[in-house]
Image 1 (tube, rainbow, N blue to C red):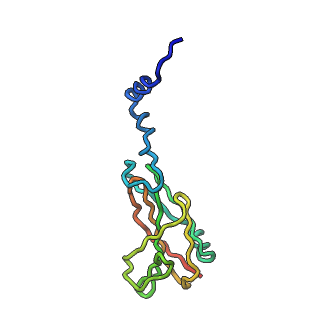
Image 2: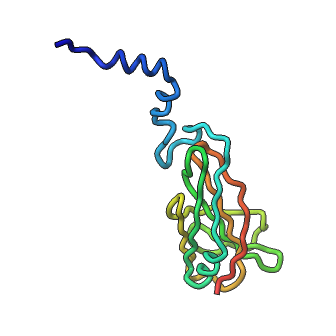
Length: 155
C-alpha cells in the first residue's frame, strides 16, 4: 500500500486555483470589531427603519431597523437622536440625556444593539415632541454610510 502526503496536492490546488485559496483566508469574513480595511470593499452599507417602526417607537420607545452591505458585511450600526426646536438642537448623549442647545450640524453617534437587525431603546425621560433620528452603518472595510435623518414624534 502506497501512502502519499496530501500537502503537495493542496499546494498544487492553491497554485492552480488562487481564487479558491484566497476565499478561505480569514480576512474575507472578519469577526465583529475587526480593524477597518480587513476586507476590500468599495460599496457603502445601508441602514434605516420604516415609518411603521417610527410610529411604534413614538409609543413604545423602542426603535427597530435593518442594515445591510453587499461586500464584506455590516460591522456596526450607530444612531443619532436630535431634538430640533426653534432653530436649535439638543442631542442625545451617551448618558441618555439631552445636551445643551447646539448647532444642528453636530451629531453624537450612539451604539445600537445588533447589526443586520438592530434595536435602540429610547429613554423614558425624553420630553414629548419632534426628533430627528439618523442611522449610520459601517462595514468591515471601513466604509461608512452617509446618514439621512428621519423625523419621529415621541408621545
